[in-house]
Length: 87
Image (cartoon, rainbow, N blue to C red; front, side, top):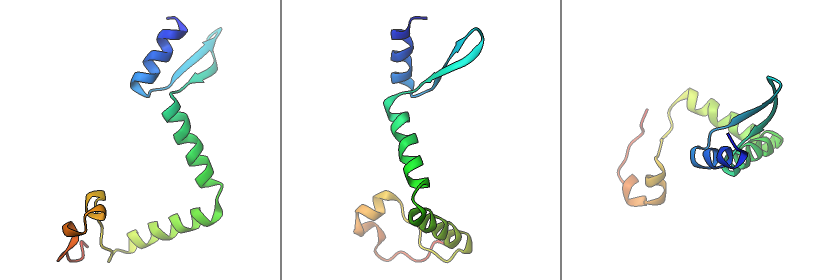
């Protein structure tokens, strides 16, 4: 398969393609969206304060007693009026 066809397949599917040389992995072709996601993940993981907040949030979720909202509810206060605790 030609490189241009591989690039188009990756762009359309957001799947990775491993490129091999003599049967051994030589490179990975990823879409710009996938690459940006990896970079954002690495930036978050490199930020100790952000990771601390994430871990605190996960611990709070495990303890329960929290209100959980969908994105639609967060952006539309009418959706959350009169709602009780979801736990």
